[in-house]
Length: 233
Ligand code: PL3
Ligand code: FE2
Ligand code: FE2
Image 1: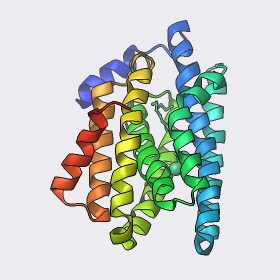
Image 2: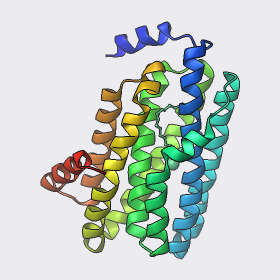
Image 3: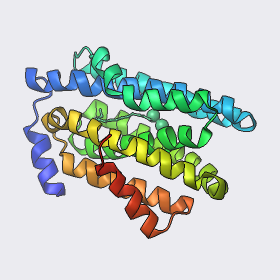
Image 4: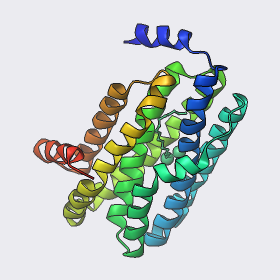
């Protein structure tokens, strides 16, 4: 596996038109994702006023990530396709805003601190071995922070598990299929950057399943919730 990745990495031409075209969309997705993550943590802070300062710190990290990835695109002379990226996130964005308007902090945390962070952790870990030197260093720093963000969500949901369980199951059913759709949309461009969809799916499911286990779900629950991803969005 590692050998295969290294071989692929050496085949990549970061300056080619094909690579840069795919990067214009993937880079935009990551920039938009980090910006929305910032906004989401600020909003979660409004729902959890006692944790507002902690959440503001997480939000600030997201802005740093956004700037780091903006520099990665600039370094390759790529203009990020931000309109594409906004569209890419509409499903999760709309569901987050709806939950926020209802004061539904459990759904907000599931979308941002579990689903989006697990998606980011999987994507960044798969990207690191095939990235250009500049982007690799930035991404290595970013992914460490994402584990902290995931951990924040896990801890809050674990401490409030009994009251959150049903809400988490419902939010999982509504949002996991959207992630599957997003993965399919990004599959071709990710492959151009040397990232395989199978690896992304595998890393995402391992990370997400582990998180659900830490929060308090048993194996049977986790299997059931994972299978929900396969139902129509
Ligand atoms: C939360 O902190 C960040 C949210 C970002 C979401 C990223 C999703 C990435 C999917 C596309 C995979 C490509 C990764 C390549 C990195 C330049
Ligand atoms: Fe981030
Ligand atoms: Fe994050």
